[in-house]
Amino acid sequence: MKKLIAFLGLLVSLTTSSYAALDVGDAAPNFTAQAALAGKVYKFSLADSLAKGPVVLYFFPAAFSVGCSIEAHEFAESIAKFEALGATVIGVSSDDIDTLGKFSVQACQGKFPVASDNSQSIMKSYDAIMALKPDFANRISYVIAPNGKVLYNYQSLNPSRHVEKTLAAVKDFSKAHP
Image (cartoon, rainbow, N blue to C red; front, side):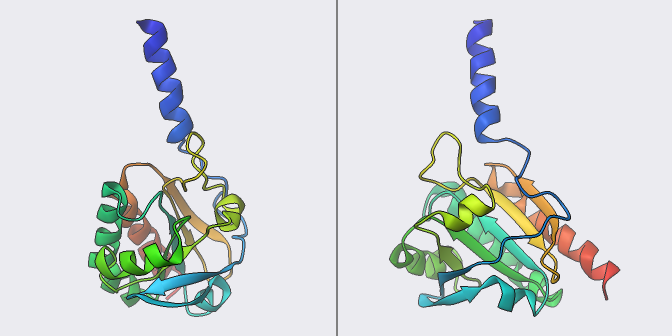
C-alpha cells in the first residue's frame, strides 16, 4: 500500500509540478498565432499586445472540458479588472481554431481571445506540455511585462486560483509602474 501511495504521489507531481519552465525575469518567447475573439478569427501577436501593457498568457488543456470552462469563465468575469490595469489576457491550447472560435463565444463570453497551437510550438517554448498527456497543454499561467520579461508564473491543474493569482501579479506590477 505504501508503494502504491508513493507511486500515485509521483504521478501527481509529474502532472502538477509547481515549477514552470520560465522563471521570473526570463525572456518570454515571442509568438504569433491564429486566435478567436467572440467567434472571429484573427492573428494574435504577443509583441503587439506587450506594446500596450502586460500580458496574462495562460495555457489550458482542452476547450469545453470542465476545468477549462471554469477557468475561462473566471477570466471573462474578471476581464474588466485586467483591462483597467492595462493588461491583455490570452488563453492558448492545442485545440483547433474552429473549436476555439466556439469556446471564445461560450466559455470566454467574447471578452478575451484564445489561440490555437496545433503544432505545440508555443506550448513547447513555454514548457507548457502536460507530461503524462503530451497532446494537451498543462495549466500554466504567466504574467509578462511590456519589456517581454516574465513577471510571474503559476502552475496548477486546479483552475480555481489562476485568475486570482495573475490579477494580483498585474496589480503589483501596476503599482510599481504607474
